[in-house]
Image (cartoon, rainbow, N blue to C red; front, side):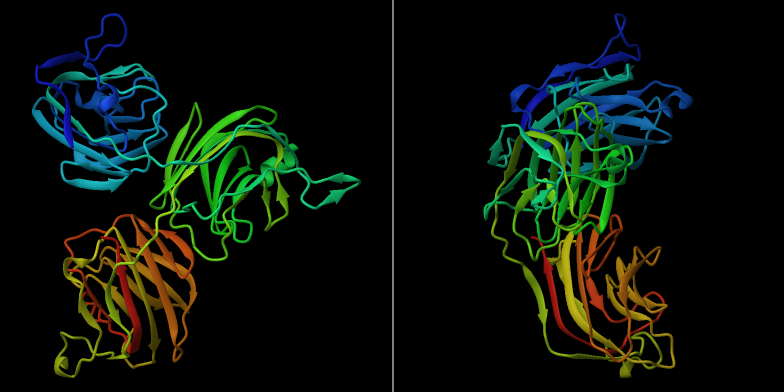
Length: 484
């Protein structure tokens, strides 16, 4: 990245808002790119401990929408994005009345501050590129000193416009071809082979005209894929919801709608995350991977699954996307059957232990990887509930069975997630696990598990090196695929 702005002088910010305010206020201008930037600065916080805990502003970029802010809250630094739609705890405590160096960066949804990284989704700016100590939406100004401010950025390529349909279309809410002599009127287009469901942007204006009962129950607005409904926007209760993977998952955007009124919405999907923004509200959240299979790239106001069809007006639809041929980076392929005899490697019978064990070394990206294999488990006298373990030193992900179901565990068994997949003894069963920045798709089911902690040694095994449990059975057709 290139240095685009520097402000070396010590700037005193007096914590006041209005005519008597003293603050930092610099225009980063056109060289700043929201998808790729880094900020370095030293700060000296002069609030009291009680004041600092009350969601106080340190730095904001974009005075009109506040797409990004760094604040103090409780005892830590927090990131506040998209007009306060979402907060993220950095886990880094702030210090009062002492100089603190901050180095934070953002790259296409991934945020890093002083070496700590986590996903925050898309930053959506409706405003300018001004960096300031004042949050003009909430009337809050930093109290303290800022010096040695450096801003770096690089212009990133943008998604091209794939579809642009400004004309207004009336949709009458009928699902079938005809009812009482009235034909179904709806909005629909095929996005074609250049559409990439793993990275797209959708802008749309719509005026919902459902009756209140339909709107509160589930009023369809727009749906992607007529045969599988991989992604959808609906009304439910009093807000807009996102649905994914054939309506298996529902996510409340928190954005209210009003029947009979136009509203504008911008939706961005990438890396398992969605950003939904209206002119007054915004929210980022994880939805996981949109499954492939039985997909036709049809974008429609009809939902061909539940017979729900949008009633109202649609206009100014813009879709940005670009299909990228994905070549899987296979880092391990072990098709032969590996016998696992249920003996723990570090037991007194170590010499007799037969197990799966492979070191993936530095080939695996712990933020984006895919495990596929088949296994068979046989009953034994010991507690052999383990199927598979990733990271033998920390057990970042474990796959076990319990009460007739396959269960996922993360971060040294601290977190447990019961899946919908049945477990059976003495039958070959399939595991298809895809992890992407906090989201797991397991045998087609989406589960949000959060970040995987370290240190990590990137080894996979049929032994759990924490509790001494080991698979008794076999594993075959093992594939490990990971992003570079």
